[in-house]
Every structure is written in C-alpha cells, then in structure tokens.
Length: 96
Image 1 (tube, rainbow, N blue to C red):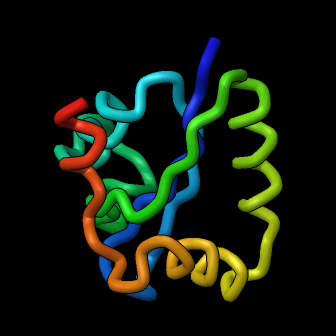
Image 2: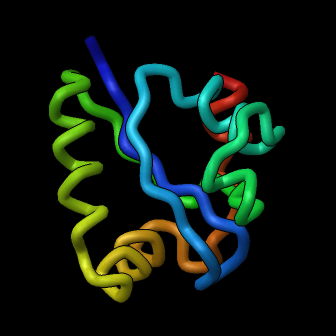
C-alpha cells in the first residue's frame, strides 16, 4: 500500500506537524477543517507545506518517525528546499 509523509504548519517558521497517511488529500482536508480534536486543531496547522510520496506505507511511517526526531532547523530546511515561501500546497494534491 502506498503512503505519504507530510508536514502541516500554521505559518512560516511557526508550529509544524509531521504525519504519514495513505490518503493525503483526505488527511490534509481533515487537518484544514479541524475535523478531530488534535495537535493540528489546537495549533491551527492548516497549511500543507511539504509532502513526499512512497510506494510503501511502512517507508512513509519510517520517514515520519525519523523526521520527528530531527532538530527543528533540519525540518525547516527540508520545507524550504522545495517550498521557500511555505506556500500552502493543498491545491496541488486536492485537484489530483
């Protein structure tokens, strides 16, 4: 089963959340719309600022685990490498 690693943020250099899922459009929509009480709801992390796709969900989950243990500066650099303005990438994945 394929999977996704993703990072949600509330603003540039603000609070971030690192997650993994099998359905990125649905999961990002849930975060954006505060569907469930969660870290992202409390911190208003509604911007999808980074994602990677994987052929195997286990690899996505391992990547999530690894990134969660990185220093914050490394996470910021990962986002800024492909998304220097921390733009919301939701439209890229929501439209297919």
